[in-house]
Image (cartoon, rainbow, N blue to C red; front, side, top):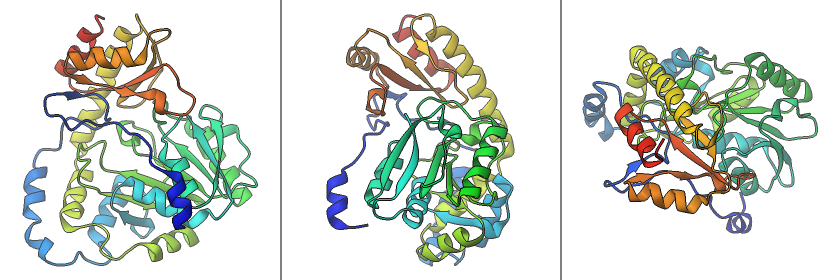
Length: 335
């Protein structure tokens, strides 16, 4: 990463609102956390006076159980984005081309540009049909953000195989996969999986995540990882959360039910995208996005302006929250 390149790239806008008087539908984090998680976090205070174990074996074992891979394939990171940055940094050099879906998480293209690479944008619903040859890296977001759709498992595995045959690493961002019952690509040869504990467990400030890779890429990720890169509270809390199977199942059921209810209600007014995620994207048509955002704000709600995503010019994204909170959103739109 070079200073002049970094200065030219800039930053990308994101959701989330820190105003305590506003109900935040702009960030896709679980409004609930597992029972007992605060006690675990507070209980890790004493261990914070020492460096974390190196490597943090217990955390790696919890992560491996969580995504069904070998503990040796897990590389702890302070959040999923840290795993994405490290994978891009190891795969992409100056002027290298990278397959990137659009619309999708804007940080993919930013990370590629920070390394001096060149994003090659492909419509997200066509990314699995793209030819990975001649690209330094291919990226998929499953389920995709902001559209919400998860990819067909067989089609995704076939794309991973084509990437492997082409010698092109595949980076699979599975930040929202925990909200589904679909299998992870973790442990698949030629694939680097990035996972975050932010979304499913409602702890965005924890900064805990991990990468999963095999063979040489796993070795490179592990060597490049800074020692003690995840603090003891995050390691303890993350390990605890990943083992909360009942919480995960309850969350999936609630999100599924509420998402379907919101989709049906909003579809009477807007063009709402199908979703497998804890959020919904909809096209507002000839209405002004800015006016809709202000209208929601007048009702104490913060929505995500999705026009900041590449290829979207009349779209809004809303999180799927708790039933009573979702009622407030639907009432604000008179649906």
